[in-house]
Amino acid sequence: MALNAGVPAELHPGERRVALTPRAAADLIKSGTAIVVQAGAGADAGYPDHDYEDKGCRIVSSRREALEADLVLQVRISGAETLRRGQSVIGFGDPLRAGPYFAELARRGVTSFAMELIPRITRAQSMDALSSMATIAGYKAVLLAADSLPRLFPMLMTAAGTITPARVLVIGAGVAGLQAIATARRLGAVVSAYDVRPAVREQIESLGARFVSLGIEASSAEETSGYARAMGEEFYRRQRELLAGVVREHDAVITTAAVPGGKAPLLISREAVTGMAPGSVLVDLAGEAGGNCELTVAGRTVVESGVTIIGAVDLPSTVPYHASQLYARNVTAFVRHLAPEGTLVIDQEDEITRETLVTHAGEVVHPRVRAVLEEETEEETGAVR
Image (cartoon, rainbow, N blue to C red; front, side):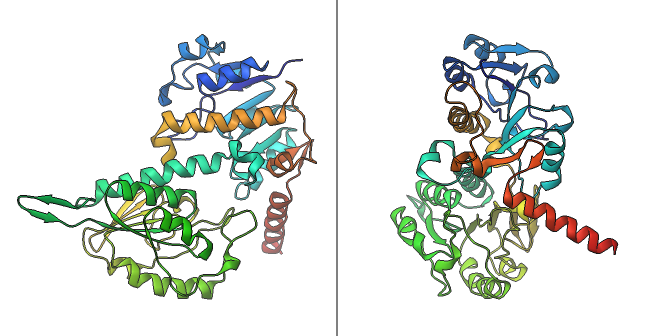
């Protein structure tokens, strides 16, 4: 029996992306997958219904009809109450923070895959949606900084004199940070970058930025997966102290430091911000995880001592056309991995499948998500006692 997939409109406030673009849908249809798309699902991203119909998709008028498919493709997994036993769903779900939601999916007998858990291995690169979205976030963060800064990024030599370039500091050299460095450099800024992992120095310098060394970098700060590892509070306290002096030397600061499933490390104190020159800008990409800056408010822009702090959230959704395009390619590659012969196969011996599978056969099967749920249960039980 051929696989059938449904693409509903996104429910999350402000979400403008769509899980599947017409071109990506056409690729899946060629491999035997039937696709139904809720009317208007791609409109905010720049993909009208007739483009889907031209590629062979069936447009349905209601969300309920799109959710009747055996496989539901979403940007953000939502609507547990509308999913039924035996269905599968793929999307971002933040399972390490939203354990109870996935417990509900398990109770309903829904099989779920979290795109942010795609392992960073060579075989899974085409499915790495987290990196795709981080690339867009890093790019857009620089544009926000440039738009808010009351000075130009590039050096300009004019008849009225020479304008010196803006000084930009990027904290965190993951995918988002490296893209931020490259974008700020393209705009003509003088860029410096810091990361707790000394191994990324070469990558930073290859993009034309100066690597900032605080003398406390640690090779143990990187997990085997390539993601940053959480460090102790004493380490972060010393890091904040040293970064304060670096921060005040820059006109714009972009922070990208995050720990998967955990609270973002606090790297920039209130005192560090007040030490910056009036008119300076800080864009915090870790706002949704608590923020790298003490003054960050997720989803809001605040001003402290003349310094603008932007708590950026969901930046990929502000560039929905290309964000959807990249995400759809990741999802398409993942679906092909799960259904190489046109039928969904749950092979838990396969690393990609095992690492992304959160719920299956009525249970939360992902060890890390299960551990979070058990810890939360123990805390609730202890509070009751």
